[in-house]
Length: 114
Length: 112
Image 1: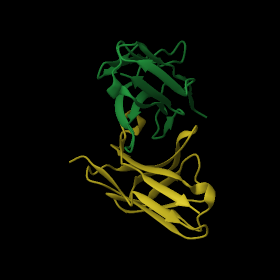
Image 2: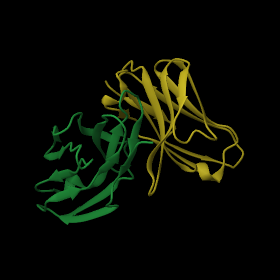
Image 3: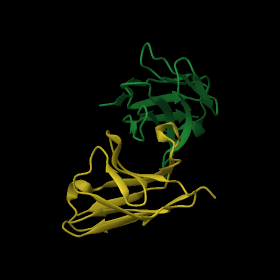
Image 4: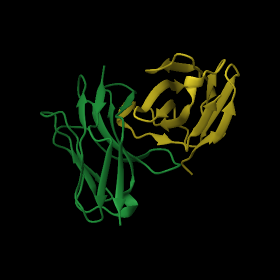
């Protein structure tokens, strides 16, 4: 069905709590991404995953880590969340042919850290 | 590193107006260039791409031409509709890589 699914859609956490954002895709794409979106800054790349257990830092990895144990599933983890991590987080996937391929995005998770 | 600049943060037009959203890039090698569109409450959607100099990408009446000389990929549409109201992102795919770098986005509002 060519879908990227993100859970949850909305999340409220307190500063210092741990946060887990989940992402799944049904296209068997090898490459997956996590971006965050902030007003005036657009979309900023946090992590890229090339396949299971093969991950690479993006432009703003500090304060985040990722886990990919199955090809169809990619998680973003915030250990001890901070208020400046309040944002909308998008997961995306693509075919493994480099960045000439289009990305398929999920609907996003809106995270508020109080 | 690679970067994308969108100079217009917001654009307000009336239906049937001509649209131009400017996109300039800075990159090494020969990057692929993309336009994505994002509607409220959704994730960005691929609009089209171009991979080589002078190549034109197009979709849904929107078009842009890869210009390596001016390092630009400006989005144009001859006659906008209210349904085109959305945020438009220009993006750059690094040459021989996996990373996609986005501009800051341009919010288009079309009045009926």
